[in-house]
Amino acid sequence: MSAHSVEEIKQGSDRLRGTLRQSLADPVTGALAETDQVLIKYHGSYQQDDRDLREERRQSRLEPDYSFMIRTRTPGGVITPAQWLGLDAIATTYAERGLRITTRQAFQFHGVIKGRLKATMQAINAQMIDTLAACGDVNRNVAVAANPLQSRAHAAVYAQAAALSEHLLPNTRAYYEIWLDEERVAGSGSEDEPVYGQAYLPRKFKIGFAIPPVNDVDVFAQDLGFIAILEDGELAGYNVSIGGGMGATHGDPETYPRLADVIGFVTPDQVIAVATAVVTTQRDYGNRAVRKRARLKYTLDDRGVHWFTQEVERRAGVSLSPARHFDFEHSGDRFGWVEGHDGHWHLTLRLLSGRIQDGPDGAHLTGLREIARVHTGDFRMTPNQNLVIARVPAERRALIDALVEAHGLAGFRTASPLRLKSIACVALPTCGLAMAEAERYLPTLTDKIEALLSAHGLLDAPILLRISGCPNGCSRPYLGEIALVGKAPGRYNLMLGADHRGQRLNALYRENIDEPQILAALDPLLADYAAQRRPAEGFGDFLVRTGVVTPRIGIPLELAS
Ligand code: SRM
Ligand code: SF4
Image (spheres, rainbow, N blue to C red):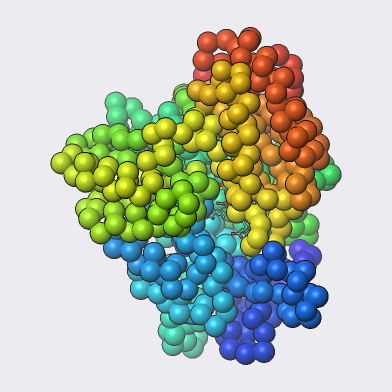
């Protein structure tokens, strides 16, 4: 759909109401009217169809097998055990394929049919979780370093991120009227949108809070990043980064992944003003004529980071201080038990592509349900589709460990680093943009790459593997040391050479190749890596040092030692 049409739909939507009510009530089709398919995203849902069945249904002259994906707004991915049980029941009653943790610490439900959409939304809200602004041209779920209770500073960062998420919610009551039967109050000024205006943002907008030394949120892939600076264990403030983004279109040099620029330092009390100024500057200067160039990263490249920063400072009434030193050791998650500042323990579990269901690998949905029934702390989804069972008293660790073992959730103890660090986006069969498999292909691909690693004595190498079913980059593949980006069924671009700290993008190594070609390309590179790597040298760093790939521009090294 053209940028012009999307802008018109937003402007004419009566603050995101459109004709959603009529579309939902229409019994003739499982789909929504075209304009409502755009608007429902702002309510946290996408219309999809089962792509495995598309051809068969077309031949039978049936409409596609329409259903809806629903995404929660769960800043920092924190939920209580009671909420877990509620969401599990919703997944079991209304959705297909269990619960799915996303790369932004949200839950997705897939396969909800139109007639059950409202009941599902109501059930989610009954858990005190909403889906407002989980999708659409607004600020999305705010990502936060997982395991926030590891120190007092972590808790402070999480609280700040949750407050920012609330602050940036649209004020429209459409969501509450359509899904929760709230009465419309005529002439109310409470729906004014001082941040978004009538047309919302030119494009989606993403914020992440990172806490060094772990860059689990991939902060430089976010439109707006806050990198916590701790002094003597306390939160001094944040370095601010702007203009990250992953999405690109094959063969179109006007689009590209970009890492964010670090523009300065703010104190905690300046966060809301600076974030609001970044959002409103992008609202006013982002490209509304060409949708594929509408993200903040292109506004910066078109107008200059310096100009944009000055505008943000003017709007916020804040002068950014010089950025402070920070040091990321790695991206991805830490696994296993870690003790928090208050003596509670946190256990990070590995979940394959974030999909939680009962299957041949274990009764994961059942197991986490059993854990939620006895757990006294909370759950934290990680930005890498994994799960932290957080705030466990020391004396309850054995109980949790027993449930983890009994339900096949202890894979993190034996899995190779490659497997632990791999991420795949959803892709087929639900994603309408997928060109190739990702989530369903990850287990096979990992087996095959592991066999290569084993042959070269590299099974313990912590290589970051990422697969996306298309160049939009939902698994943040351009930050993978090895990444596959879908081109066509069974065919991928092989990208190599990112670092393991989320500070250098990878580069195209081979285009449009199939699995045998991918393995054949990797085999000699892994052999060289095994023979010539320096102590602690990552695979991506090795490929860059030896000139196999030329890195794209990364984060200035003087800030990131
Ligand atoms: Fe994404 C579109 C899934 C994180 C970049 N993304 C989609 C859609 C909604 C397809 C569509 O538009 O029809 C996918 C739904 C698939 C499905 O069936 O569920 C989808 N994106 C996902 C999730 C579920 C991937 C996952 O496996 O976990 C992630 C949900 C995050 C959340 O909870 O909010 C997800 N998407 C990302 C990320 C990673 C991140 O945010 O850290 C990116 C790259 C960062 C970025 O935004 O640049 C990402 N998704 C995109 C894009 C490209 C945007 C761009 O400006 O270039 C699209 C396509 C679009 O917006 O037109 C897209
Ligand atoms: Fe779909 Fe592409 Fe995102 Fe994968 S990367 S979920 S295929 S839009």
